[in-house]
Image 1: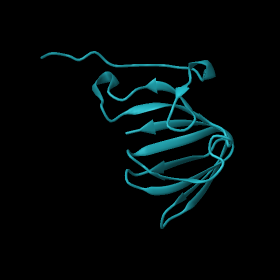
Image 2: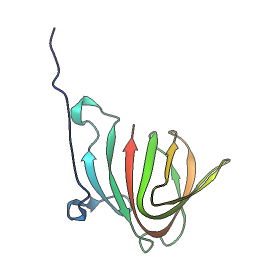
Image 3: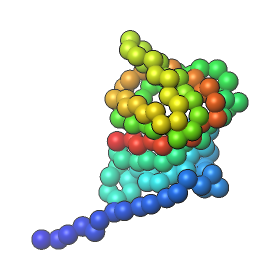
Length: 114
């Protein structure tokens, strides 16, 4: 029986590794497809209120779990709850959730897409 080597990765929060993202910057820890997992990715998202001065709508494209390292986000789920997330806060969303995000302070978020 063939064995598949384990995939592992590690990173430290390093803004020097940031790359442009749809909004803000991202430092990837694991990119989609690495380790043979096409739907799994994680990293750090950096965003500043100047990059999103107004709330924006976002349909969640994959199951997503987030943890706020620093900053402040307000996330409203259509037909559901409103989350005020600051350092230490976390939330998880199912694929397809319709949300409205407000960036209320410079924010660093750790995210996992699955």
